[in-house]
Image (tube, rainbow over all chains, first blue to last red; front, side, top):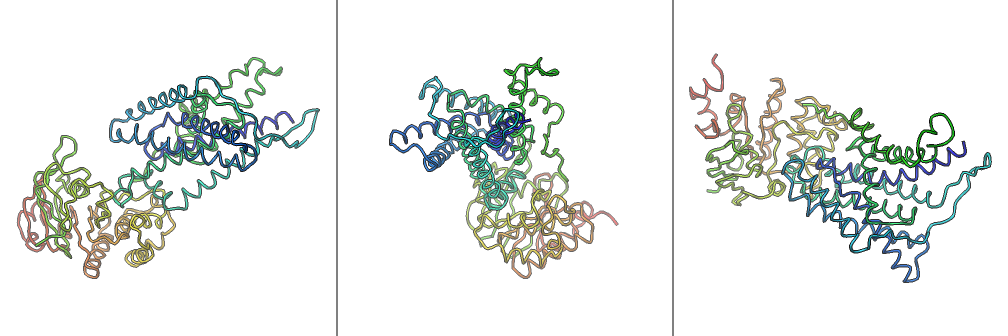
Length: 314
Length: 237
């Protein structure tokens, strides 16, 4: 019981990170109907910008403390947003109005470009950082097993919820959010009403990248490592989360992220344990579990848990 | 004499299909002008070509003395032209109020007077204010499409078949709202219609569009009296 509770906590913290990235996939899909395959690499860029900022700050002598973390987070969001904007401007906007597959292929190309750029400029080896947020709170002690929440996990949950709360407010309550929803529902009509739709799409990429930067920073702080290839597997899992939640649905993205985080964590925790069928499973297959869900969702529930079926009233 | 809107020999096409072939139309300030024609004659294409989408392949579109051919869609809207387009294109997952606010938000104007005007013109929209656009009836959607277009206080309003699929009583209400707007605020209107009878009664002038070409023009009364119009568009009694 205590063990299960601990895994639940671990799973939720991981799921929050997937959720942040999944929001970026789902936003872009909603507004221009394409899967931005470079989004996982934008997350990777976010992690690297944070890593470099932490290193610079610590050589300056003030790496620790919540102020430094917040500063790094903001720097990473700003610079990564610039990457997101550039990717759209360079690789997707010129292909608007082209055939449907064109931007998808371009996105895969952009993903390779970003990975290789970071590999060449930062080196191919995984880069570690010192733990910055340490300590934990013990919640409960039962059966000789202590259930605890680390400070890092608390930071992940609090930061994610805060960022998503601001984001939700922006989408539902502000003029910019309204313009984004209008572009998502009928882009041409938005243009007829004087909305600069290209600009709105750019802003969508900027916001998605900033959220991915938050995820990248949290991931770096939690696991202490960044490498040029990290965006691929995390990106595919976040994409799975977006599909599971229902592509185009913002609450669905967070829900999908949490579910994928939990499933992955539970698989690692219980596969191979000496009970029932579990002993047949291999904990190393946790990624297989996540991708099996992707395939199952696409086959049996293509509109996802919270997505809407594509029926419009005429 | 400078017309408010002037199309000069405009040719327009969707892909390889030519929809307009050298069309010249002008609309004077304060006028209601109607463009009638059968399905597929190119009426909606003409309205969208004014907005540069599709862009005219040949010819020019002049609005208030300014050549707007090839300007981006949103800039043409910001120049002072609004459209209640074919199919109404209400944002289905936004409330009626949000749909209306969308009409004003790119123009940096206070939406309050616009909302008041919309609810005075179509009290039905006030009752439906917080309902989602996608759940409205066809007639309510048409009212909303017109009211939304008016939110930006345009100088020229383009209406694409506002009567399509609506009950005669609803159509009468919408046409009388257009007449009121024109009479009270001097709004210039370019109205595309298949419902030739009512459109020609409402309009000061009209054009007949047949497979991408203007075949007739004249005042509303003149066109109503033409035998070929009676046969082709008004039905035989």
